[in-house]
Length: 576
Image (cartoon, rainbow, N blue to C red; front, side):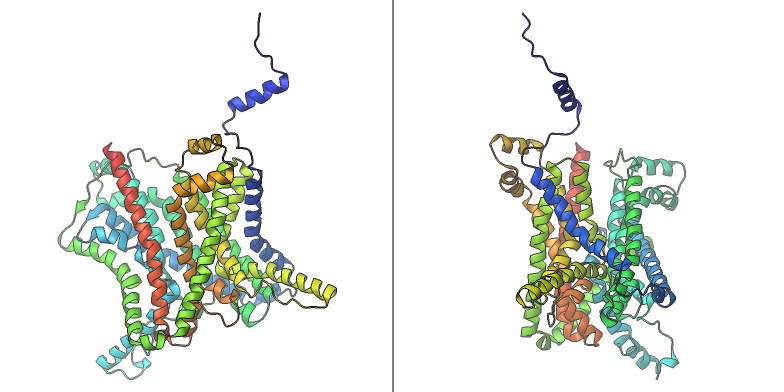
């Protein structure tokens, strides 16, 4: 007698679909994770949509006026700034990456991590430092006049630091580590056998660089340059201090000085086109990066040992960016901080430090919380819609602070006006501003801008947790939330803390959004440095600037440690 179970046609189709599907069925209770991920993505996307909406339907359409007057100049200056900063960053980053990868010379091991230190110095801080040194009343020109007997500026020529070229130099000195980090990782992972084969065919080291290594590293170079240019677009303190009329400065001028938020939104929409172009370049480069073979990337290669003039020249290539981008600014700020310590060490300094700490800590906690939801939701729900929602939630990181400020204030102001009108009609009471012009607006802007940093770090940590841990927790009766809190969070705690720390430091340095969205008479360390430096009082704000730089060193140390750990893992894999 045949007792084999018989399946209906519908059940057969379901069984075959489950059997041959490459997707793991989601555990029960994941619906709310999916909806939460979508909700977070919608909130992050709200500032972008607000800018687009207001630019299309402003209260006062000034597009014709912008096109006829300032817009062409804003666009031209922005393009020139991007071209200059990108070129200088590429030259510095690629040259230092190549020298530290391919050659062995005194100090190479120190330069491998020390060349990342300019990351810690905000561009506006280094701009204030060098202006204090190089302007007409600075000690350098004063010393030259005294040495050569010059009386006025007409007696000699000296480059103007407050110019487009000066802004390019300042940003290039602190942004090149993006290129250095990306390109050096590619140089290390490139096929050593390919380079060896080129050398056996008679190619010199220079020819190997131009024909083999650099073409292979172009995708990584493009990714690094995209990050550099996004940061250059985000800068406000430097371009405002140097009177360089970029789109970022134009947004602030039209909004704050002219009182036209619609015009600011229209300029912001133009700036978003630049961002979309950079994102497209970065995504296209990542696709091309997969085309390169790295089959023997763990094969050790012998660095060429340099001596004499060649060793000194290589050392100089690495030392000059470190000297100009980190050592000189830190020494200058330290000197001013010690000389003017009594003036700076005031109750106001502690108040501003607390404000910066409170805002940064709140934003770090919020972004970590949302980052956990996004990363875990993506892990649980294997759907394209969820993956796209997570990708959209990272769009805020690409938005410059000035654009983000416009996008945040629009929906918050609309909400405040609606509530005020409602209470006025119902109870005859005006509620005033509930969200806009408050700390909530600043923290919300921080969270939107840096959510991608938190979610990316947590997602990479979650990928190291095997799916068997989820299955074991489910078999013990844990819900998805209990699995996250009791199983995953203890395992990925280092990644969560790293994400929180990096977001905290980024918020400490953030200037454009803070300057626009902060409440009245509320200062942070960043806004304090900006205001005092703008009034030619850098010395009195040097302590605040030095604190920002010293705090910024922390993620550089973490980054250096992660690179060293990754390199050690590769060496162990190569040995096996």
